Image (cartoon, rainbow, N blue to C red; front, side, top):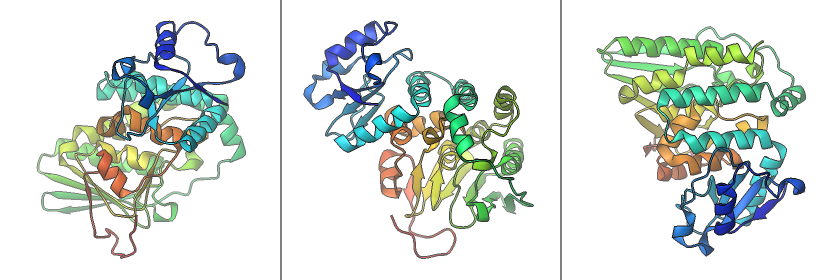
Length: 336
């Protein structure tokens, strides 16, 4: 899929008539690129409607730029080509993502989680995800006796994700165990602080890929996500929750962490949103939690590029609150 360069005036015209079949369809393009450095600030106040059938990225020398007229802002041609390749391979997932993020700012947490889950479920039933699943057949998921270790120290509840052999990939067993503990926190005011970390080399490598798409009915899976939403449970007690990140923190590993009131990261963290490569969007609450910390432009950039960011960038963006020098697992080899 090739990127189409448009000026701010042309973009404004396309937005005004978003229902019209866009002229780039015949060329197979679904990515519009706006040169933000060449535009006047008053030309960039265009609000993108969810119905505009294109991903719009701005190219700018200012990495902090976040105009309403763009879904994401990139700072070099290579990144634009990278996004064009992703959108070309997974256009349905990419357009679903930007459409959802365009409206997420005005939604409550509950409404945002509902909208995300509905979009995620629809994509799980779609061709892009089915092709990914067919190319990577699911293997049986090994059961873990204690997927979350629990320890109470006075008024502090310590929860440790405990599937180190799977890099703490989130499966149904870990989800249910963590949900049970968070429900306890909500009911027990004597728990003044919750510390959530992970055993082994990573905090959480995301959802367990061998469980993806294995639910017999995506519609029922959507209802299960709503009933057992870890994002909602974390948000409800966020003022008492501190998450300590280390190693890989991708997909649900960062989406859930971002709901916490305090997020601390070891210097070696690698944060990313890889779901588009599977024909999906973030499905553990990331379109809600991450956007509330870093805004929709940076959330969209992470998802569209598939890039990994380190601790310093994550702190600069506000995705983590503090970078700690100590290794939560006792090792001394942490590095950016």
